[in-house]
Amino acid sequence: MVLRDLLPIKKHNRAINVRPAEDESIFGLQRRMNRLFEDFFGDWGLEPLAGFGQTEREFMPSIDVAETDKDITVTAELAGLDQKDVELTLNNDILTIRGHKEKESEHKDAKHYHKECSYGAFVRSIQLPAEVDQDKVKAEFKKGVLKICLPKVETETTKAKKIDIQSD
Image (cartoon, rainbow, N blue to C red):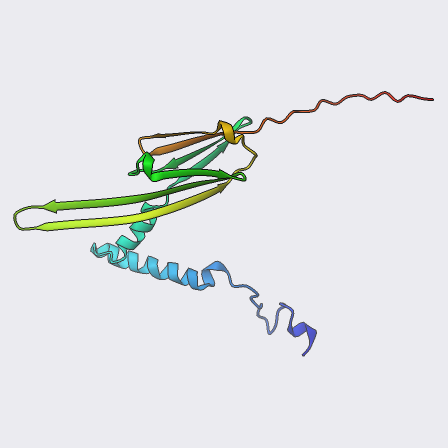
């Protein structure tokens, strides 16, 4: 075997793919197939995978992170959750938001009975861009929005000082 056979160079006017692009992987194929079924069945109002896709989106909250000179603010949209369903932890500058959701609906009338249940959990971990003072972290939960204020550790700014050189 020749060394050039092992190198990813053009061979027969074709480039050798060392690592396939994301769209060429099995996950890319799966995404395209899911999109195909969603587009086809969505036009008919059938959507057989709607429950699966909705459940996945329903339990993955949107998160915004903003940084100023003094603090970091994390805002998470947790619609439909109560404060008791959410847990926050801060460990080595990684903020973790955990939550679980239980939803049940039941409708009865004289001829029909319909009950739906959905359960799910999520975990979101965020690497914070700066060191924070863990003792001063505050969290507030109002109307399905969790807002976390993480004050940065105050660092002393050193001023330049002129040092006199003494001679013997």
